[in-house]
View 1 (cartoon, rainbow, N blue to C red):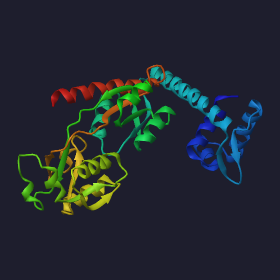
View 2 (tube, rainbow, N blue to C red):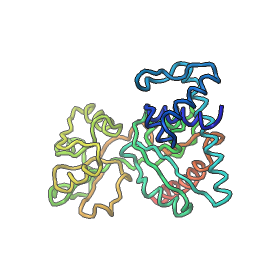
View 3 (cartoon, rainbow, N blue to C red):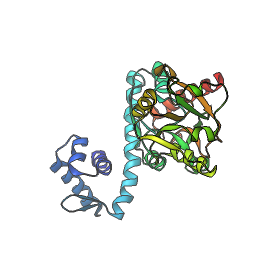
View 4 (tube, rainbow, N blue to C red):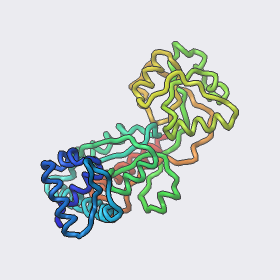
Length: 303
């Protein structure tokens, strides 16, 4: 057994396809298949359900896969640590983030990059359940989203809470001049507006729908989308107003738009940045987490 076989196994889990797993491993498909068969022979276990295509892992394969993730994560962490000793902190950090969080990820990354310019980033948008699974399986290094703190404590994640600034109604004043007011908008007033909203499966959207439903009100989306870019374009041309977590958008990017507060109770889940417990987090992830935690604390003190 060697580390490459375990990396191939993890790549196969991620890609769910022998050809794509081989590409991700920078080997030919016959080489990947042969090395995985050699691993099965050495362990005297069938790890993979094979048909004409990849058909998942056996029960034994899933057990071995859990160990493989741990070993590969430690191996990758060791490589990053060696590189940081030679060249300073460098490498690619994988961030999983839930859509419409109460923070600008780009601003957070820029603040850390100013301190550690050798870092690169790969960002994936995921659901709440996917994010916990991705963190647990080392598919991402850092998670940012809405969580139940009791769950995070059980999993022994390191946690930095992100300030909940409430919800903003974002609008174009040429199309909705009646919103140019100092006072927060009530739920009843928001329910009478045409809205541009994220699609209903997103956690933030479910939170909005739940509150309005409990208040006996109904939202009226004229535009639903998975794309924040399309959502903001809809607001700009006057298709409707957007309901977004405060801190999510960079106001300077949308100088023509304005926002006012929505009078709504806070979410039951809490916004937070999380990483694996200290002994399991890679050096790269831990350095980023520490620097990002300092920036988040500074932003909270400014507000």
